[in-house]
Length: 208
Image (cartoon, rainbow, N blue to C red; front, side):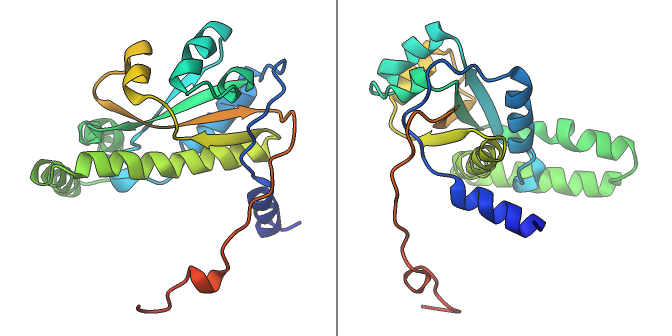
């Protein structure tokens, strides 16, 4: 099959699975590969706004259960990943662009211009930090789910959780915003089918 056909198959097969085989332990190698692919997602200014809180232990899953409104999938899935958005991603300029400057891929002038643009955006608009954290974490989350499916696992994105309790229980610093949870594992039963709106209800050609 062509690359397009393979990708099409993965995208079509990805469904939100809510019932998992509770006895499946995901090999660390598989998890690391999935996370590495998730982290290759695009991001504004390449600041890579995502962080992954990975929960695999039975003890931590049980603590997560009431926070997730008793959705049992967080216990039964092999892994639950909390996708965090970095509200202070502008502080990552040196870590991201410093090596490129040292190797000559960026000139000092270009580096300074990029840094100025980033800091100006964050300083001048109070919404930028939160908007960018959510937007870019979402890019990575979708890539994680596709990577998991390609690796033979199913997933489910979850927005129904108690954010304040999650932050307190897992000691999440103020810098990071919980955007969603994603369960990963082997299905105990298939996802129920969902419909999709036809393109003629979704696509606006040129203008409204």
